[in-house]
Length: 147
Image (tube, rainbow, N blue to C red):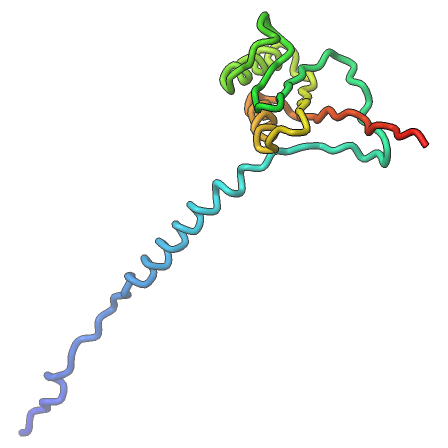
């Protein structure tokens, strides 16, 4: 009798999956999500008026006005130190107190036309973090030119 040597030299089939490529793909996806997630959440929601040539109607309650001067300093028209510059934390705390008392209080931002736009956006973001559902912008009407 001749033995079948062919069956002995055969390797057993391995029923394993090589997961290293899948781990590489998952790590790349994790890095992509970690980089893009902060970019998605940094926007400031602003509801612009839909009127063609007019402004927003006057609020029925007193509003809180944040002023940004030409140097980028914040002033808020509530509290005892209205004419003193306010830090980001003071601005947040004062808005938070007002909104805890009356949630529907409008928050408005008035900024000098020479101030960096980033400071205006920062003021709006602070108001939004304090709980303001909407933040409005105050502008002055354009000057009329005499003919």
